[in-house]
Image (cartoon, rainbow, N blue to C red; front, top):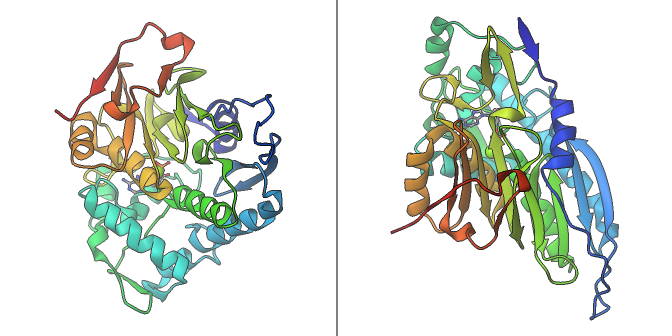
Length: 348
Ligand code: AMP
Ligand code: MG
């Protein structure tokens, strides 16, 4: 029997449980910061989004436009998008936005040794994850399609013309929301906003602190049950999670999720069920959450040891929780995990 989980329902669950923001009822003693936010809700990039800004409410229309514009360029299924045109033709001059994102994404494919691979699209499509027509491809189909998966076959010239090797197609689903978060935060910051919180379908990105100067409290969803795993106290950071529970289907008692190991062409089987990345750059966090999910705990910890731009929370399929040491002081387990052991990954 095939059980299909509708992304829309998942998105609603994510919205209600993934980002818990504690409202601040106390008055600001500087009296320059409004304590009530302006909020915009939209559906974009296949998920529900909430943009919450304290001061600068007039920027919300522009922020929405910016996200929708990015979606219209990047959508892998939208027939008018730049990515669709690129995938259909194998070569195309793209907008500055798309070229910049592609360059950043390719650098992150390299940094993660190809655990992130934006040329994974032929495989993702075969599994039905972009269309909702889920199916398990045969080994032969996967082997055939894997020959087209290799991000080093994507080249971008100085005039932003992108060329793909024959048969190759790209998918920026692993980084698009992180990129959108960065752009909205940049818009707010440039216009003097010092307090805002974005929830892009469970991917959270904070600008500054809460209006009273205290950190935002952002919850990470429990990948193994209902409710939350923990809360992180953050400011000026993104908290971006990749989880097997976010999009999956079941067939003959097996679960198949949407994060694919580019080495095998099958859903990543690394022993992790969720990876959350905390860092200043939303795009980097989005790319790394997907890549570290593929890599598994050991390889992910090695990559973290050689980096200084992110921290991480890992949950294994056995329910073990690991955090990198930079999160020790800002991590609070949810009540249901009060007594759980939290293992700390250290540099030394
Ligand atoms: P995320 O939710 O950010 O982890 O991104 C997952 C999405 O990225 C999937 O729905 C696919 O569209 C795409 N994807 C899956 N596996 C990979 C991979 N290894 N590298 C790059 N993109 C991927
Ligand atoms: Mg991602």
